[in-house]
Image (cartoon, rainbow, N blue to C red; front, side, top):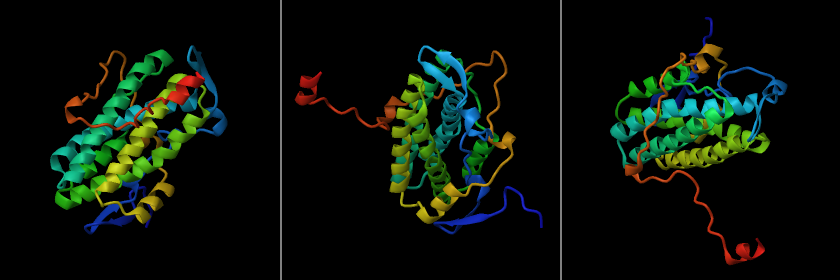
Length: 250
């Protein structure tokens, strides 16, 4: 029997079976490039050189919000436990903040942002939406924990290598936000770490068109993820308070 990208299943709590392919997350939007091309400088800005990897990272963060924000709203409404609803709140608030930064720095760097998530990412949302009750909880947590676990090292790589100060700032915020999301997802008690670790390190290879967000037509209005200060959720690490010793050395 021929194998397709949808073949394969994993077991998660509650007896739920899901496709392996539904849990894949491409390292850089599915754009298959060599290391040398990713390091290629595509423009010199007042904030430092911008590489292909830098540009892809900004688009990747934007794309993540375009599916994780609505998924967070769904989890807030349909999650069956307080921990699930808390996770939903953190997803919404965190990605609204990241989206705001993406929209702020993209014009400065000459980056054209997408208005839709990739087909694969949209399927993630559809997969969760099709489930109910405890199965809904397990489906959402498994997908989100795998995708966040895969993006985490990608953020660290960009933070360590970029020479662009705006991209560096975005990586700082993304690092704090993703760590916060991983933490609240694990608080639900629904993460199967063995299965998650396997999926993070063995994602199936998907066609490029499945993992690349569509380019918006010229003149299309920018999609904005609405901030939710009413939720009173903090998703970034607090700034350390300077000590007297620190001030004395300045």
